[in-house]
Length: 514
Image (cartoon, rainbow, N blue to C red; front, side, top):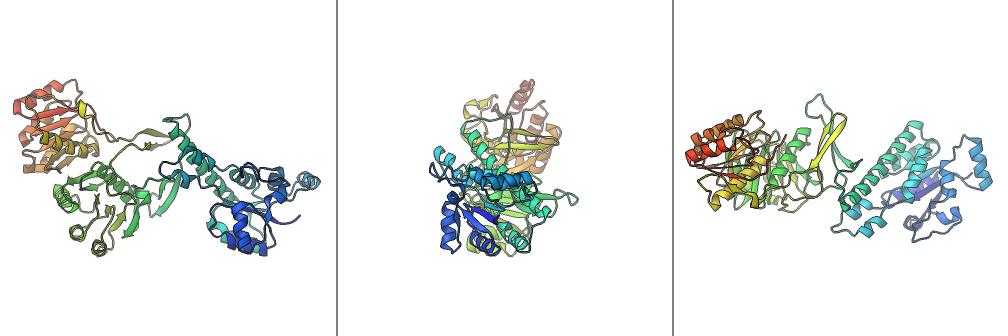
């Protein structure tokens, strides 16, 4: 039988060189449609798939490789005499190499407002079927789905044969590829049908980089991005300078972006160990950064700063005054980039999204991987329903007080529970987080704020179980408090606020962050 290779690809990277190499190695090339046209143009002689099947392509190309002449040629076990006798009786030639990648479904659904019918038309049928057939018969058929493997596969074929382990590796690549492809399709359909928690679920991720180690040096690690990544994400950010990102860098930077998305006005946030240690909004990011820095000049050292406007030279000059692990922004001026380069270890990340991306529902899940399972929930997009905001004290907050309280509530929403945030002039001045009881979080935040707590605003991520947090707030000079409410002892806290003339509002929505 003739040595044959079937080549049919959407991504034509490196395909001419591979096909020429296969031809030189004695393989007859079978091809289809656009691939055949590209190869013929490059001077590679091809055999049309219809000449192999004896059947014309039909239904606008939907049916062309779904034929026994193709799949028997792929699945026949060369060491099985009955299989080979059957092929001979049916006049079917074996196919020894398969080079296939699939219709661009991922690229199709990435387009804004993609049409459902267009997405469905880009679901490949024949390609995955050929890949699976070839991969199942890995010992006899060498199957290539990734252009990165072309050169090595050709080298091995030119040297006589590809060993079993290499063939198994290519087999793995096929089933990983088709699994991702099917996950993209099923998740697209799930979202379109508003199926939130199906009986089974799969996710597709692509490796972005290997990591030197995980959370600690004795743990290995890697970073994977959503295969259908959102633009305003770390997975699609461009690193302009600095060292390679670490596991902890990426984890903390994700928290910084989550908080940054809360603000549409020029904003700067600082994060350390996944907790905010500074946040502010202002007329420009320069002033916002200075205010965020002043929240905690100690903790910001070695932290991460994220800004939601273009960083100019003036802002960059401030950023390089201290050691920062990462600076994130939607863009940097050329002058700012040069300034930041003076800190060679500082990672500088440019987001692939627009300057302003409000935190809004996108159908994503919030996931926590457990041993033997995974917890899924909606991402915490909401802050509170303005209609639910209720003044519960004799002293009522002014409209400006409400704005300040809302700012504080946005900050505490992204603070580990139990969390307390204190804000003044649209800047955090004290943050207490990750405590096992709320009074400890309150005391931590108030102690950190010091004199800045006088006339400031306090936010709690969940209700006060006792009046002790109000007592501490009053002693520090807090003007107004925002909290969800809902404790059976709310009356105690309300009475304490009334005693000290503190305004307090309930919003009916808590923000635990564990």
